[in-house]
Length: 298
Image (tube, rainbow, N blue to C red; front, side, top):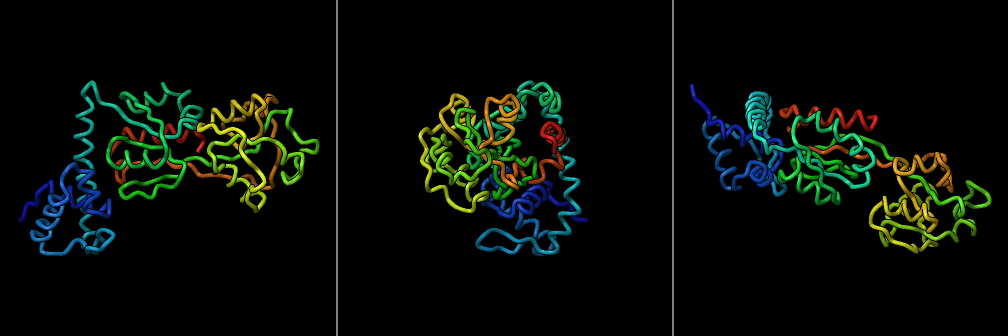
């Protein structure tokens, strides 16, 4: 009876899940040639081909599908035990990344609950989605709240929250005929506070709701943080499009007004991203994911 090298099986499983020798090597902290050697040795030992090599990565064969089903739960269980054992160290942390606005508004007010869920130090990192997902893939982050569906090898995204966008301004800017189209001169004359020069959120709202580009609008103020955009709009600087979770209390208090009520509100799905397979073998991430889902109402 042949005894297969455990590290070769672990490398095989990581390559199988990541779909790439290069990505698997990065996740395992080994070189790409070493990962290739592990897989080749396992193929020779088993006497069968596990992957077809392609310019875009590797494609598992039916034999690889079967082997992954057989060994996956056992490798994951061993890794989970090793992870739990490692957590006895005082410096272990769980690293959560995401947009500053979403984390600050939706999750950080519940920090004690989040920390209790993981049973370890919680480290929060703000950033832009592309950089955060790359840090997740490389192992610098454990879990990421992503405003876009992750399309990074070795990363899996689960829908978390549908954020609704609202066109808002201070009451002093409200059009005399609430709910009329922004094409009207009254509303078109309202200054625009935008997140970026090209007004990405406002453009998406206009295309979705009015089926046209906002070519008649020009930003009078650029604030690269939605919390800053909200503060400027509250101060009367003009109008903007913001996620409802950020302005819900302002709308209820009357300090902000909705300038338009579409039949179908524009939505954007927020995802919770983890490295592929981590939720299966890491009880802490499963616990944290469950709490985040509960806190966001998903």
